[in-house]
Image 1 (tube, one colour):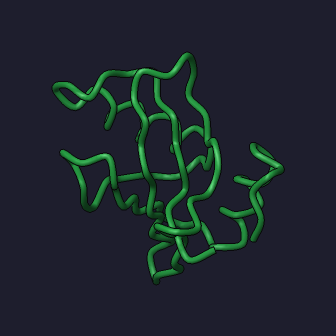
Image 2: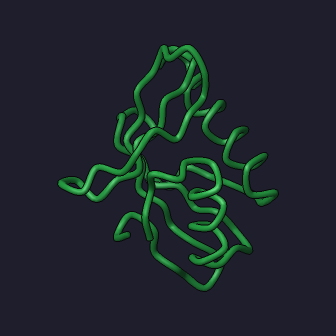
Length: 101
């Protein structure tokens, strides 16, 4: 899965965000764009969707999360600290068994 890259501090994760969903969900993997598809309940106004993404990924991984690029785009890169690529992928697959390493 090219959307997740291991770095010294943790991992970088490329995501594609769809707002105004009924619930937060990691919905799949876009192989064409090499991005993990994420659905959020928030609207993309005043950073609400970004805050939800940070909160949910922090809760999911028990790690510090920041958005490193794409603050005003539906295509974002997250930096998740103190986690390996394999640990992150295991968490993702538990949440959505249709995803594959």
